[in-house]
Image (cartoon, rainbow over all chains, first blue to last red; front, side, top):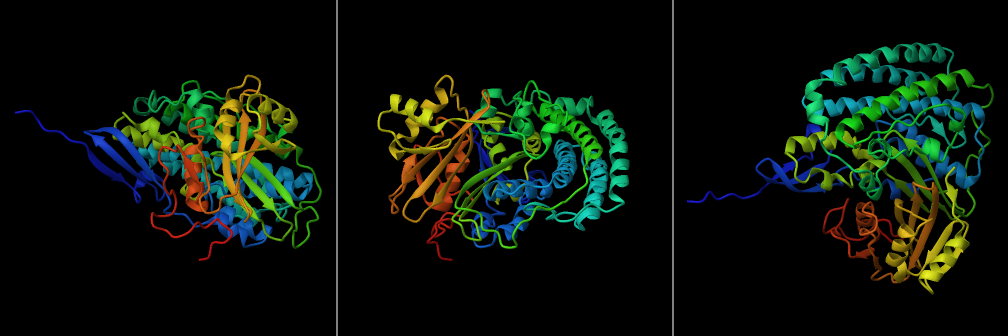
Length: 367
Length: 147
């Protein structure tokens, strides 16, 4: 008698340790091999784009903290850049440098979490992640020093930053930047040539260069596939054109490359922070911005290179105090577009590695 | 810096390939008629020298008398960009061709617009609500949406 086989459905999420938030994937499995997947979104949808239409431009800033909550500083910056472009506000130089320092610290923190959670997903349960939390903690302490917050900073404002750095900040930042390479080296020894990590990540989830572009992916996902595209270089904003740094890229576009690109970017961020600390000018930290901002009629798109990719805000103004339309270009959502193509035909355990390497934050996917 | 393509040049190229497709233009923004979206997208992506291979974002705005769709197109190769727009005046049944066959990155974004604006994309492989649940009444990002 012939053996009767059939496919079956497995739900991963919405509450699952490897889905990084409330995200659900409906897998159709043939044994252990994935035949199809349907991503299910919306568990964290708060309608931020709609809410923003009802509040003033400066009030909307607080929503951005709640997008990618592992990178609130860069969300603040992207929104500020967009509004400044719309209203034609010139940001003082000192504020731009402070923004760069905070944004690069945020990138380091976000990438550490990205790599930490990836190792978590492929079975190195909690140990590497816990060490990465140790470094992130120091970054959060630095942010706490400048704005009194550890998660939702609201530090960058339209026209500058909310307050200047306190006296103790620079010595603490210097100490952190001097010691960080030693700790990164420690992670490299733990992970870079670890046999289990290599087997689980090399040649898994290969995203070709053409597919990465066609799927509108951005950030480390796009660069790991070999596309040298970084908004900081391609369309420089703030004062990034004054710093020397490289854009790390991968060659294959597999999970390993996505992990490597993040670590290399941390090293580049350290270099940028060092240069910004050396060049930091004196002066104002806030441009003269009216209390109630009324940008002229029109539209603008401001974008930055966030830790997870290009984060942009498309704003339409009808001359009133609140935006007529606010659209967020969410790198996390768009980086998920190739997910289905990547996981079909692989084993379910590898799907978790692939998903982890894309490094998303649900606050930004669902908005 | 990412170079902004001149809209007037894009218009002359589009008009040569697809006569009667453009409505107006300014800066680096070109507005085209809605029935030409798919053909224009194909032309902009596959014409040598333009090579707009990257759909940066796709969104819509409700101007109460019409919906405006915004396609932000970038060429990663040449580092230049442009904005393609189209307007849909039929409020009861807004409909436009899907560009998923040109840029797969449009998939989730078209679903998002369908979900929040109620604009249908013909030819989309899996057009259903993305954030809100099936059975939700209304389209929240429309200006006449009442809670």
